[in-house]
Amino acid sequence: MDRPHTGRWFEELTPGVVIDHAIRRTITESDNVMFTSMTMNPAWLHLDFDYAQNETEFGRPLVNSMLTVAMVIGISVHETTLGTTVANLGFSEVTFPAPMFHGDTLRVQTEVTAARTSKSRPKQGIVTFEHRGYNQHDTLVCRAIRDALMHFAPTGN
Image (cartoon, rainbow, N blue to C red; front, side, top):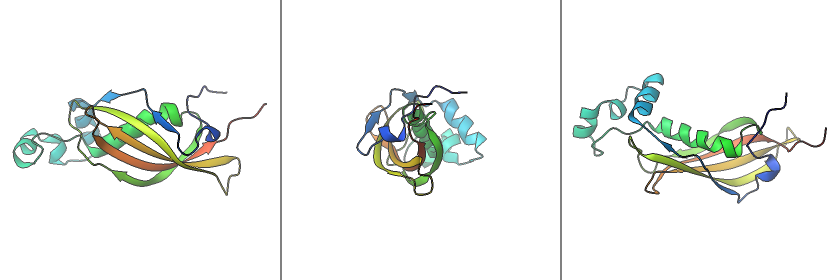
């Protein structure tokens, strides 16, 4: 069964392509508590309002950084890899230059920084994406560099 796709094929992901993703997402307290609890992360910084207010420089709980990176990648999927990827190959770098807080809205931009045909799979290619997440103040809150194995565009049947 052929499924519709919204991602881009390898040939469409040339170095220098920049995608400002249409989807944005406000991260709620509920999102943060649920994600932090589901992933078994007991860090007080994410769950204990009293601790965060009185014993941290932030004065309030931080959004779990793993939630931030997961949302950055998730937001990018619709316009980069949905239906066009073979597999995520890994991350070479993930940084969090500034924190996210409950109520912050995340927007994402993706840049293709490299692309090459796979040596072991000549009908597929490896694309390097740099995903950048910004809050509503245009502050960079997450930068993730990852490689994905991508399908070539299908040729006639």
